[in-house]
Length: 491
Image (tube, rainbow, N blue to C red):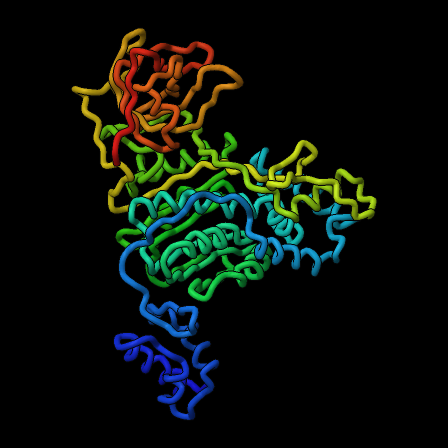
């Protein structure tokens, strides 16, 4: 198609979009030389973002509707088979059909072990093509799931438009991109412009997997570093998924990225739940939101007291149901447990429902546990609540209340941390704490049961909670017993 014909397609689409659905066959008749409708359709797909058009199943294009995404999300049970097949194709192409056995299987397992060790020791991670594939085998499913749970926080608050510009900094092998695509695919038709920044060989895996996404998801891959990336325009969402811990100066990169946001845009930062990376995320969050004051925490670690900031260790993470074991993890794990005999014997790895069984080993990773921070530059918070000193005790002043019963407001910042049959224990915070605070449910009643049933990140009001000091943990215990009332605070 000539430049003049392309311009003719665009100009006709601009006119027709305001009149009726844009039909490639109709536009073909209006353009000099009458290019084939299939060629016209391809041009419309390429220009859909600039024209704000979504492609319908019948092949016509219509303007993306105004308004926000209506969430239909109910959680993630499994990594989709079409993406598993795409990754399997890459592995077969690289190593052959028995990629999980012999030398290739040994090399992949050694690579995953090294990646896990580097993460554990907080060492720099270098990605060659083998490391990218190993990372995809081990982390693609959980990355796919985690981003959907975090994105859901925005959708529930009505903060996801149907036309979205998303920047994924450190896009890796594509787990977050696939997760975002599928989350939005469950809602009304959305138009997504997805810019992915990834300088490593992981970009090759990203490119292959994201080719499986739908017609209204428009990815652009930038093979450069986060520090060197120069955006064109503003973004509704800027995403850092499992990348801040790998940067030399994450605070500086995060601060710079805030300038990439639209006025009502959101920055999502996600890290693994382990102690070092989760605490590291809170340190970056506090540097940006509290020290620099360039952003507001939308969720989950709300600052409830004006002028106060948290200075505790900040280890806080969410936990969601495990995923079904994906076939590529099962194959690599079984290759190890079978000693790479090459017999092809299926030794199990999942139950009929897809759960991890007792024989599954170190190469099965279906845990969905993560720390996250959602930041805004417009001051918006998930719960627009300000604590009142006349009605609530402040965690910064909790020392003066030891052995007393007090009222307070706090955010639930963990699932139960207790083991076995012990009383449920939950980390809580109000944004002023210098020391960890744990709510201990010693006697559940109909009046305090909200503590147990509330979700991670929910705001709770406590009445007559007993304050004790825990020498072993060097923390405050807020004892919730038969005298205590706990209610969820509407947001």
